[in-house]
Length: 248
Figure 1 (cartoon, rainbow, N blue to C red):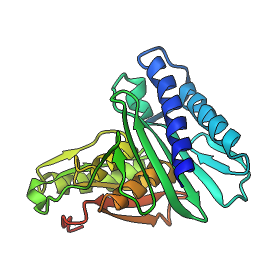
Figure 2: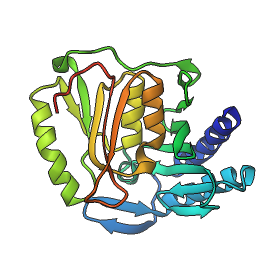
Figure 3: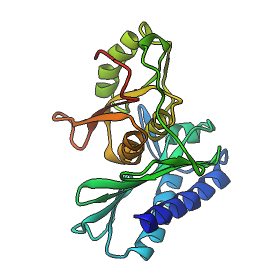
Figure 4: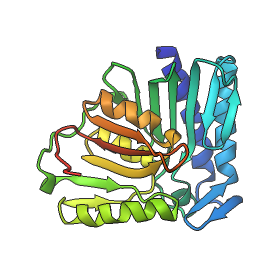
């Protein structure tokens, strides 16, 4: 899997360079919703990633937030979020990332998450210790919920916000701090390397969490990922260090 991992890292760095270059510049808005924004730079970043990956692996498929390309019957499927944290990006908040995973026969085998502002690259492949900028990392060992820092995702629709808000209220009273940071992939990367103790979200897309899912498990944590029966292509996720008892 090392050549796949290298290709994913190369594509993430290229997209990161594009995002970094255009950060805090006027952005072309493609679509606006009550709790979300779609930017032209999202599309440009995914097109760049697609070109790089499919040039090297022309028989592969790519499934991303900005659409699908390639041979969708392929056993090799790249799962891409070219800009996770678009609202942060648009408002000039330097907390966003690129997430790229490779799924082979429905199992995620490679994952990279790249923060182009801090120039932090989390990467890993199935069954191996993941690395952050070349150094191995592990989930936290905090077991006491009262000492935990937990990120609660407040998803993009009114339905999922209403589901998550009671959870946020409950957790605020039980943990040291709750965070709502605006990038699911970075939340998972932070759980994987011990900055956060858990991340909980009730309505998330696969491209947001595929790479982070692999990184958390490879770093010794646990991920409970379940399809939402009431929301097409959405999942609920609880990712943690595997020690803390969230008592959900």
